[in-house]
Length: 388
Image 1 (cartoon, rainbow, N blue to C red):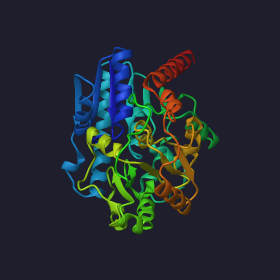
Image 2 (image 1 turned 90 degrees about the vertical axis):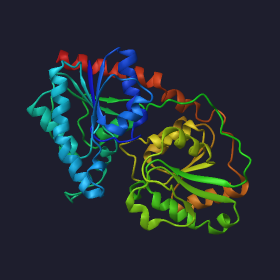
Image 3 (image 1 turned 180 degrees about the vertical axis):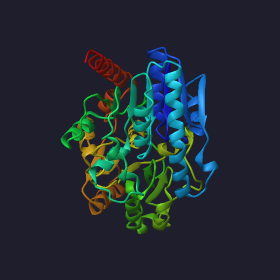
Image 4 (image 1 turned 90 degrees about the horizontal axis):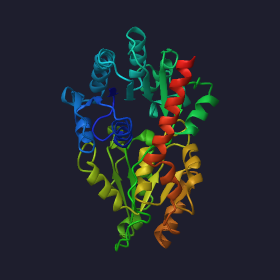
């Protein structure tokens, strides 16, 4: 039996990654899974993977409507949720405990609990965007990025870290992080069997930003870029739209030149896929110093739909582009450069052919490839630690 817990995800957040591990444990390791997660996240998982032993967490949104109280309540509840999951794994003799995701502060709670109450089995911990807090010094204790670096100072016996990219592990090592016991896999993704983008009849170039939208992800730049195309928008030559959950901090950047979702929350999977399919170009305008220590699932959503990408020249995009043929991914230096590239595409159409452009990425990040990579490293780490 394997105990799996997600202390952070709600709705469709990290759904692709979480489904990967759950399918792997169920189908390849043939283990019974006991899954703890937010209720709506469990519902999204249950639509794809049948898991008999579910332990739902109540949604914090049902308790508090405002963001700040929700965060405080969520972190307080995390203390009890961690104890609950660890005790469950210990009492039921789990083969191991896998923590799929935790908030910045919850990492400290988790490690303290594991020191006080060992799980009695190996613990696997996924690291996501919280790793980015290592790239910038945060001095304000009420900000999430302040807390995560302190968690790395709390040693836990038989704890194995999973990161989504060998480049991420290498960057962590470059920054002096001790990475013994780390497992570096590529971001897993279930790609549909399709090699070229949908051909549409409309002459309007539809430009989209997909995934979670916030200032930290550069969505404010997307609004600024759209304002520069006011004339072309009025002529129906181009249209800008956002597909994803919008953070409240973006409201001050709203403009009539960008189509905004008329609801709050995540899309369902079918709705999300259809919206992406209607796009011609996808923009990723995250700050240039971002994605040094994390991967982005939204990028693979774009690749799955064979959409051309314009992105800022971040370390992650430069690393990912090594697997791309042709000009399916155009890297730009700044907003002016993005404008010039997009204007050329508005005038002359999207360049090149996307046929097979993402083939190498799809093979490298396929479920089968990543599963073999993960199981091999997990086995090697467990053997090395037991042998020590």
